[in-house]
Each structure stands twice: as C-alpha cells, then as structure tokens.
Length: 583
Image 1: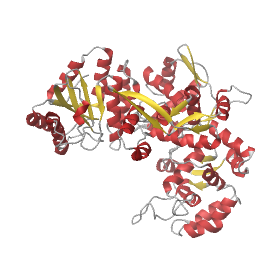
Image 2: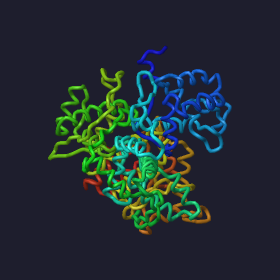
Image 3: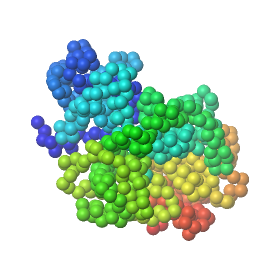
Image 4: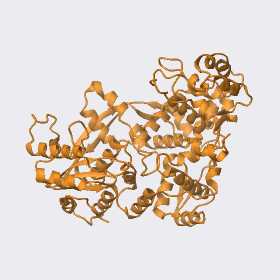
C-alpha cells in the first residue's frame, strides 16, 4: 500500500479544463456508474465488464468496487490504460470502467483518452468528488440528484444548471457572448485563460480568414477543424454543452479583418450567440435576477496547466484568490501578503494573475486601484502535500517575470513566447505568436507563411526585409545544417524569383520597394555550432543574419513600440552573423 504522499506524487490529474467531451447523455451515464443498483451500474456489473475487461486488467476488482455502497473507485480503474504494445488505438482492449460506459464508433467502448475527458468533466462541474490523497472518485450530492433525475425533467435541468453555472469557464463564455452578441470560437478563445501562458493559446482570427481565402472550398471545413489553439478547443467543447442546454445557438458568422496590407473575409461556422434562455440564465451568474448567485467551483488544478512550474503558479494564485475574497486589496497589498507566505512576486505579475482570474470566469470587481473577487468560491485548497512547503519558481518563470516588468508597451500576452520557445511540441504556436508580435503588435508588414516550401515568417518595413525561421526546442537550438540549407534556399529563391523553381511564389509577400534583405532564426535559446551555420549562410548568400531568443525579441519589441528604437536600427542588429544580444 502506497502512503498518501507517494500516491499524490504519482497521480498527476488535470481538472478544471475539458476538451473532447460533448454529449450530456454520455455524461449522465458516467455519473450513473456511481449510483449503486442503477441501470448503468447493473449493466456494467452483469454484462459489460464481464465481456470487455480481462482478468489481468482487473475485472473482478472492478465489479467488487461497483457493488459497494458508496461506490468509491480509483481513478486509474475508471480511466483505464493506454494502448498496449502490439495494439493500435482502434483495436486496443477495454481496460477501464468508464471506457466500457462510453460507446465507440466502431466498437462498444472508448479508449482511455475520452474516458479521462469525461471524468475530468464530471469532476470539474461537481458531479463527482475527487479525493486527492487516495486518487479516487465518488458521487457528490449534486451528482446523485442529476443521475437519479428522469431524462428531460425539470430536476435534471436544475442539476445541470447548478453544475454549469458553478464552473467558471462556462460563466466566462456566457459573459463574453452577453457583451459581444455573436462571436466565433477564436474571438472567445482569445479571451479565455491566463495571460501569456502556453497552456492557453488561440489562433488569431485574421490568420483563419486568410487561410480560408487561400483554401479550396471543399478543404475549408478541414482547415477549421484542424487549426485550433488550446483555448479555442475549450470554447468549442463548452459551447457544445451550452447548445444542448438551449442557452447558446450556433450560427455561422461572416467576419472581416486586416492582415498586412490586405483585408480578408470569410465565414466561420463555429460561431455562437446567446438565446433568450441563455440571456436569462446569464443573470444568475451576476446575481441580477430573483435567483441567488451560484457559488463557483474553482479547482486548484485549473489555475495553471502547461507551465513547467504549474504547481507553484497554482499555489500562488490560490493564495491570491483567497486573499481577494475577503476585501478590496491593491496589488501592493497582495504582494505584501504573499511575502508572508514566502513568495516574492512583482506587482505586474500580480496584476496579470488578477486579469487571468477574470479570463477564467471569476467575477473580479475593481474600485480605484483595489480589487475584490465577488464570488463565493468552493473546492479551492492547496493540496495537503503542498500546503506546508514553499513551491519553487522555475528559472524560466523568474526570467518571464523580469521581462514582464520591462514590457510597458507590448502586451503581456506575448510572454507566452518564452514558454513556447522551449516546447518542442509547439512549433506551430510559436511560429504564429512570433508573427503576431511582429505584425500585429509592432506594425511590421508581411506575416506568417508557414507552409510547405515556404519560410515560417517574412516581415518588412520600408526598404528592409527579413526571412525568419522559428523553431521551438526544449534544450537549446543548435541550428542543424539541414535548416541552414533550407534558409539558404529561401534566400536564393527570393533573389531569383523564378516560379519554375518554386511555383508558390512566396516572395510575393514582400513589397516591390524592399531592397535590403536579412535572415533570422528565432528560438528559446541557442547552443552548439549555430554560429558556424550562420556564417556559412552569410558566405554562400552574401546576406547577413542572426539568431535571436524569445527574451531578446520581446525586449527589442518593447524598444520599438516605446519609440526608443528605429525600425532600421532593428534590422541592422541582424548584420552580426551571430546571436543578437540586447539587455
């Protein structure tokens, strides 16, 4: 038997944010598993588990757990295992209770990923209780009301209403729709989640519109489906729930936005607006109705997702929320309060956290220079294992906070470039956000190309142009010779401009007045022989270039936007054929 501390360390769960779990019917079946003697519970015991779960995967133990009263089941038994060696995802055996509950498209059970998504959904909205020490799930009182209510009944709707309005991201989506009337998932996603963190990314809508205009009609649906940030996925999932509740309706929206020197227009089907019922329900979240405001369920896990030091961020934000529940406080007062807990934070960091609380769906009221969280909060506590110790802030977070202090003109949302630059799984997001910083924030012309046989990003200003390669890499980017050769090829294609060599004519992104070109590599950091490769490109092409890390790029962006640096000076920094430095 593992002790409680060991169990907590091994079981890393992510509650509070949900993707890819849609149908209320399936949610109800998941919750009904925990009602002893319910039809779902009995069918599992008497039929499905017997047929679908092997003895080796724990069939007898699963049945024993479901026959108990109350039903308390280890999370691992509910979720099941991933795909075993020798199997594919489509033919992997059923190995978890919730896998057996969820119907698949070609088989009568699902894999562990959907099972985990539905479990996180049920826990996040309060239908299931999660015991962190034991890593087990059990039924809440609200969950029992929901599971035992007749389908389509008033009691069922009341349980769902209470659950959804206790979930902050639902409240955030409702509030944005109430203020914006008709919004796309990208417009909502851009305002959902914590500022400047890689766990909350949204695809800029102008890039979607540009993509739609350049894509054949039969391929546009796939483009919209495949091109999403993390926050956009959360929006799509949440809105699927709200559609089933009758609070939101999906209606295609025609939008138009500028990108560089062109204006793009297109229709985005995944767009939403409140129904009359939805507007009435929204009043419950603000207390502007005959119904009392529903307390919000805030889980410690939802206060950070992808950051390397996410536990530290969760602990810090938990303390700030608890402090702001009591009275109006200034960021300076919050800073002093955190110091009593051994946390040294800047005022700008605290302000960004408070903006993040609004973005996840908490009701933050500002009076003068002070803030107060107006909600009643339930379920928020620092895990016992972390309560008595000070979590350590990562070196990356220290750097990030230092840069945050210096960004007085550049939006703090671009701080996520520091995270993304070291995340080898986030090349596309890094490419997109780098292009956004340069074009939307700093007014360079050009933009992201990022397609087969095209550079990642091209920018220009006046007579100066730059071809940019962005690479997210975990341990420092050495600039392999293959990437150096690719950059050389782009420089040569730009010189020749021969569509027989490259029919896509990507160089058309540059204005005719651009005469002086440079190249750049952007990454989290650089290592190894990158300087030799830069010099090699220079010797072969006759053009100058440089390597620049995310931090330096952000600091230069601040200089440009503050007017302390000319655009021509920015380009000249890349004449070094070395790493660009600026501190």
